[in-house]
Image (cartoon, rainbow, N blue to C red; front, side):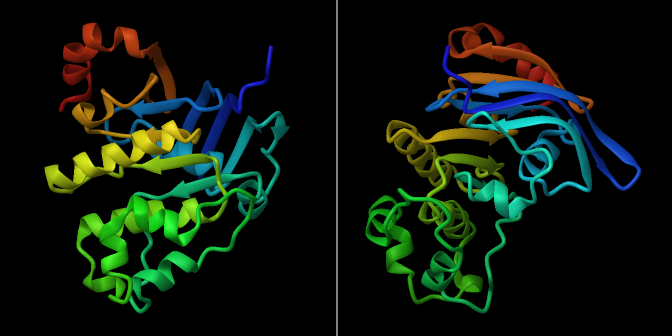
Length: 234
């Protein structure tokens, strides 16, 4: 049996003395789209940060393409083809849209060209010379996703990309995520918006108190949707 692209076992994480991840276990296969669901504070964002080595401290096992990364610094993890799009987006206000896009280095072969990115995000092409502060929230989110596509990453960690955006932009981002999956990208996505995440994911992981408490596939989504709305409080 082929190894999982991402395999997480007994992952614990801390911010200082605060123990926020309590033995997280899950795997993601190549080409899968997996969504982490849960209330605020359940550990979803901390899990993504821990995968990248961006948490205060961590222990356990995080394997990417079979390689143990728990002791690696973030830049070494990124060079394995892992791209992280944080919830706060991290757009540089003093740089233009295209300068923001070109800022991250190419870390692995197979990244998208600027032309391919503009074909996927035509809004960004029309706003290429605009400063980061002049982009709308939706355009900033598109730019945050686009930046990691240039890097050559094939495993994408996307944190709350639909948060606070107009429905028409959320729909556009949904189509983008579907297109990335169709092109063979592997995606781990943190989402609070169940209506956005539901039609996209192959599997759903529900987190609570820093651990995964449910793991189910797309076929079970319709029967679990109502209970999830109650569980997540949305």
